[in-house]
Length: 462
Image (cartoon, rainbow, N blue to C red; front, side, top):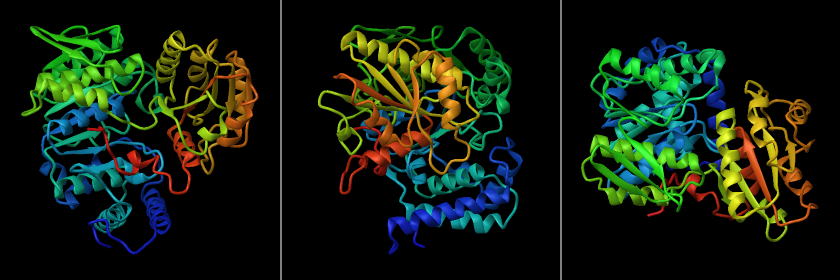
């Protein structure tokens, strides 16, 4: 199989082969999540330690906002003329979305070749799926060097498979909340301690706005290892402006930031964290104008995204709007609900929620922020996903949260079911990344280029 992405196989053939090899990866270590770095270091040693050959790397951890901060950082670097490799997770439709190598998306053919190579070198030894797929990212990014690498943790930080880069150029910790508590700890302080462990001695650490308890934990962790820490509200700050942008300040530095290309007040905090990383680290050749252009023009699918065309959008009456967002935990849902309340102050319309989440999530915590905001809440299944919470359970939880809840067999059926309401109105599809990916796939029409930004992996429309 060639590694340049060329292949005589069809897209469907390649997708099936990738699904098959991912299924084999699970058999090497059947626990979906098993936090440890021992297997990862062994696997990387077998591969020649590609993580030690990467260009300057920005390592990002957090509960919410990792992907958005990655996108803001990459967009600014690209506007400044730099090439960027980005590794993120999870994906929305294609597994290859996770891999952006030296300014270009990785093709399914190239990804399959990498997987086959790593699998052969692993030789059946224990390794989780995420460890193997992360090792493939290191291999790809070490062979085709960019100017910078942006590396997003999968879960936690201390024992995450990405936490093997010895001396990153910077670390960024985005907003921390309650999620994956069965793996990271019972409270926000425990979770903060796990994520703070990506910090490294001598490496600048940028901390996005946080609850006070989180700031204390991250500060103590940084002091213990000698990591210079720059905290929102302390060493730097962001002040919102009436136009949706803000003013970033650190000591004598004052940067006006434009309204981010990703809507919502929470995205201003994410944009400011990215700006702080650029300003504090002083990446060569990246001027303020590049940061501003990147923030303004960034794209990141599935984050409060207004979908204006496609098969799903066409189900809605004239004047209706369709929105997608991958918020799936209480903090993310609260930020999303706040964003729609702000939108309603400018342009009030009824809002209908279509949702699905995985069974290990805090379902009441996800739903309560929408109380008093949405007219209806329609629960849907996630096809071929055994971890998805059953529709009947979602309906019960939604009603207990005070929502007018119902169920539908699919995303298109759910969207169509609310169109007899008086308009204009909005439909918000929110929850698991798997749900958002299914909605995007359902929205795509034959020959439609609507998802080119995913297939092309672009972070910024220059």
